[in-house]
Amino acid sequence: MTNTYHHGNLRSSLIEAGIELINKEGEKKLSLRKVAKMCGVSQTAPYSHFQSKEDLLDAMKNYVIDQFMEALERGIHSYENQKNPKVLIEMGKSYVLFFIQNPKYFPFLFSEPCMKVNLCIDGDDSNNFPPFQLLKSIVFRIFGDAGMTKEEMEDTIISLWATVHGLASIATMKNVYYDKDWEKKIEDIIWNK
Amino acid sequence: MTNTYHHGNLRSSLIEAGIELINKEGEKKLSLRKVAKMCGVSQTAPYSHFQSKEDLLDAMKNYVIDQFMEALERGIHSYENQKNPKVLIEMGKSYVLFFIQNPKYFPFLFSEPCMKVNLCIDGDDSNNFPPFQLLKSIVFRIFGDAGMTKEEMEDTIISLWATVHGLASIATMKNVYYDKDWEKKIEDIIWNK
DNA sequence: TTTAAATCTTAACAGTGTCAAGTTTAATTT
DNA sequence: AAATTAAACTTGACACTGTTAAGATTTAAA
Image (cartoon, each protein chain N blue to C red):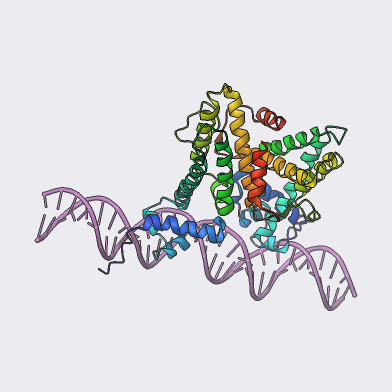
């Protein structure tokens, strides 16, 4: 049939076209009208699937977060013994590496984050930013039975996240010049903790 | 005289009005026209002083960087012995504290930075991002004569910056919930390095 | 088969950055 | 002191933006 009025897959197409634009030109140059045109659809068609531009951006972020979580979990499962503290190092490496491989995702995810992050040790995790929730659960799994106090675990969690997140931030800043191999340097630094 | 045609101070007024807007509503809601209106001047008047909106934003960032540098230097000089490694901790605390006190400045300065950062140990520092140049020079001053290799110093510099920058990033994310005292937690974490 | 709902369309609105051309004031030269 | 030039501003216009309103087309439900 030659029906071109209904796209069929517009919602996910818009998300993927949007992410393509993010990787090409960054969030600042992304416009709803461009994304719509990429999908061969009128300017206002997206409003059948998203309340606003911000709403589409949130959906795109969730799409990226899913990929991010998969990368983190691949790193974590490189050790069979899930109580080996080395899994934290692998997670950290995966964290930084994901953004080195997808530099545009870092400012996109973290400039105006779409999700809540609860740092409190006994805080509600059900709506927590998934990567952070994952870090929290792993620290608990490794150190919870090992006599570490809650306060020490909280310090560990925040410190780990700060270091790794800071490394990712530096490694992906487009104005940072560094002539050596980031991956190696990051491994060095994470190991020396 | 009743001359209101020439503003007299427009360039700096635009910068300050722009920063006021950043603090009120963030960079995303800042428009050239709003800033111009705040200064009681027409939409295109800013073009006599800045080539583009981006150009004004860069000037605003440099204005903020000056304040930032002052805060860092106040922290550094809390010890008279400038070779005491504790000055690095004071610098780190000042770094994070500056952004806790001015949360909107963090995404503003680092989302699309206006200056180059050269991480290479022997790199050219003349055009380097001033706060980073400062960190580099202090690490050199403290550890340069103390038998530390260049490679170790580079590790130290990147690691310090990553940790402190990561802490600032976390502490200022508007979606991060944390019910305790950030300043104390940051002190804990920086000291435990 | 009619009705309702979902998905799309065009037309229009106010707001944006920026250019072009002209006006007013200040500075410089004669 | 007068004339000229340059700097700092103005209005008007352009293409682009997010978003709303009202209507058209297709699919799903009754």
